[in-house]
Figure 1 (cartoon, rainbow, N blue to C red):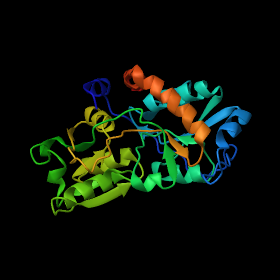
Figure 2 (cartoon, one colour):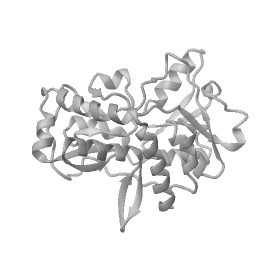
Figure 3 (cartoon, rainbow, N blue to C red):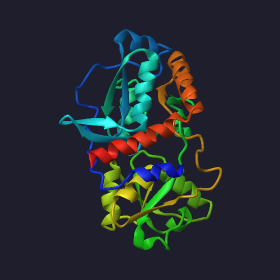
Amino acid sequence: MKKLVSKFFSGLISLIAVTGFFAASGPVVHAAGNKQDVLYSKIKARGKLIVGTSADFPPYEFLISKSGKQTTVGADMSLAKKIAKGLGVKLEIKNLSFDSLLVAQKAGKVDILIAGMGSTPERAKSVDFSVPYFTAKETLVIRANEAKKIKSYKDLAGLTVGVQTAARQKYLIKKSLAKLGKKASYVQMQSNSDLVLALKTGKVNAMAVSGGVGQAYAKSTSGLKFVFAKYPKGVQNEEGMSVVIPKNQKTLKTKINKIVKKLNKTNTFEKWIEKAGTQLSKAE
């Protein structure tokens, strides 16, 4: 993650646990991945793109109070708006727990996912991914008084690490430590804000999270610090964050890739990260 990310986060972020997708809210998309190339037409006919995210992941997605209502903002949400505009439709954001996002998409509750999610071999079995829109260095959030003890993933051996449920960080640590013949223990939670609390109260020794997010929490929470995880080559997925698209939706994937590629040429996503910092400072 480039240094600009860490400049924009000060003050404690109060993040809100998001509602489950099983609540009956809004239309069912009916875009199961086994249907060939129908989702784009359905989105156009509906006139609305439904995007799933998990708004506890600053600077990519988080909640602020706007006009008395909770509004989802962040760099990923700027991307969602750009994609909806490019498709010529309105945008609806659905906040879900991170571990329910892929299930919600499979059930037809959302069209696409934009949630700082990267491609993994397991995920690629059931969904497709756009070209990457951003690559961030993986980080570990630690207590500041343990900065000399934990400097990279190598120092997690024998410790307890907090990871978000269904996120790839547990996989990265396990694979990396296995190369050294070592292991760690894990505590999984749905919310990153809960993991921060677990770290502060000593329930875990470190919190493994994507770059940018780790910097945000470390900068905004007294007594915490971040270090880069430095996972070895061959373990970490270097392709970065992508839009998650149901299988076999060639037309939609092609159109989204075209939008993302155009944005990548102008480093637009980094500008959206700056905007997210401004939004967060106003929310504090």
